[in-house]
Length: 61
Ligand SMILES: [Zn+2]
Image (cartoon, rainbow, N blue to C red):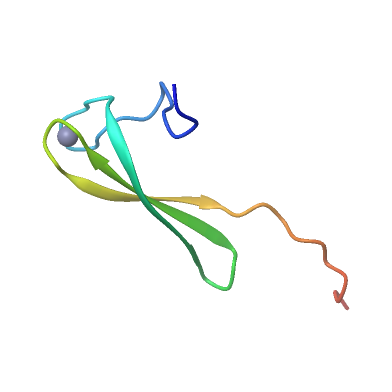
């Protein structure tokens, strides 16, 4: 089982539980991480956005 496979995640189009990791990017100045997946059953691709882990706020005023 790869670290990218989670039992609670599935294709939003066909609900298949097998998918491929495609890409990862950071958006909104590092506040979120988006991960792209591709369904192995129907080839649907989608992005999933999660909050990025908090950085050390060394320069917080
Ligand atoms: Zn699918």
